[in-house]
Length: 87
Image 1 (tube, helix red, strand yellow):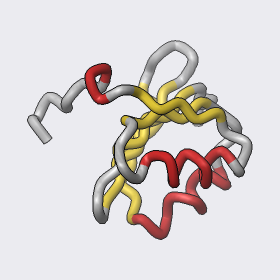
Image 2 (cartoon, helix red, strand yellow):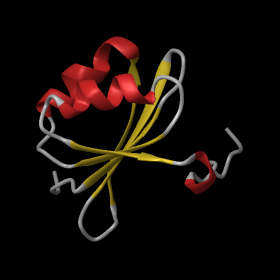
Image 3 (cartoon, helix red, strand yellow):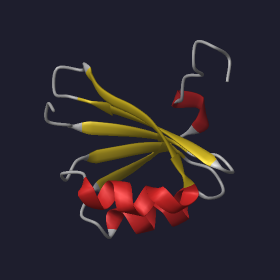
Image 4 (cartoon, helix red, strand yellow):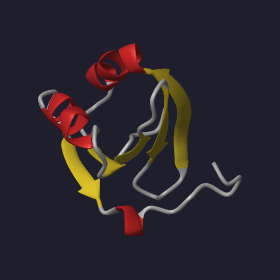
């Protein structure tokens, strides 16, 4: 697997979407994670930047993921692009 440099995390109520990109911007992985799988997933991932939209639960997840050594960046909602399928 290519080296991951940045991970986008889309927070939701039950299923979180995770998108990993390499230094060249290419897709390294795309996964769906349940709430209970998030910390275990980021524990196994090499240290990288994790970006997520700032929302009500984002600060909780930012603290948890940051404890694992990742650099977490919260993005204002205006900067987050909707997916092409409208979800």
